[in-house]
Image (tube, rainbow, N blue to C red; front, side):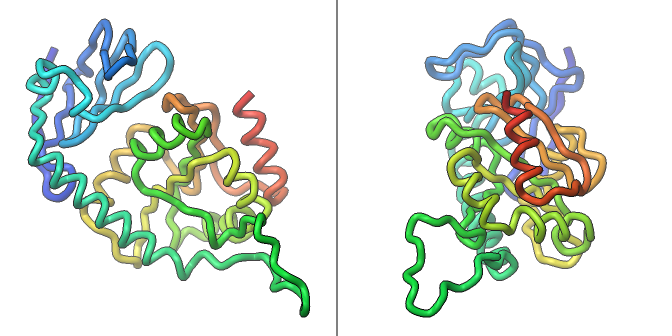
Length: 246
């Protein structure tokens, strides 16, 4: 078994990578026990792995003291990394907000807006997969990863306009999905930390082109994916996601 330590700037300082993928018969995370574990990546804050039930991740601070030492956990470094991620998430949402207009027409004169309706502009796209998986588990939802080149990929932009920016998709996502955008822009500013995180996710899921949409269950197991643009609008995409989840 070989392992190495790679030092990187930004959020993922002290990224550990098992050279041949370190294998553990089981991994205990709080009250959860995973079996047949293969560790793929360890960052300053998280451990990523595959297991008998799919793919998973956990915060290093949830592991036993022995495993924390083994994977080089440093509480101060982790806190600093989480703070940088929070700042990066905030910056991302501020930058992305103007580019997510609602497709819902304004209400007719004298008509009150529907308070229960969910519009595309109200959808929240995160950038932190571990946080998304934790939210999915607590809310009993799935996670949708959107691998995109938001400011240069024509098919990404078209699918976003035709599907992801519609109120029909927004209504579905509100009840079923936690959304994560894994963006690779060419012109929009992006923090070093977010670039590194997105590159890691692209390698982890074997993404070879944009757009790619990957649906995960609450444990991080891939349920299915769509590669490229697909016709049919939001109803066709929703039907595909539902089929993946069966």
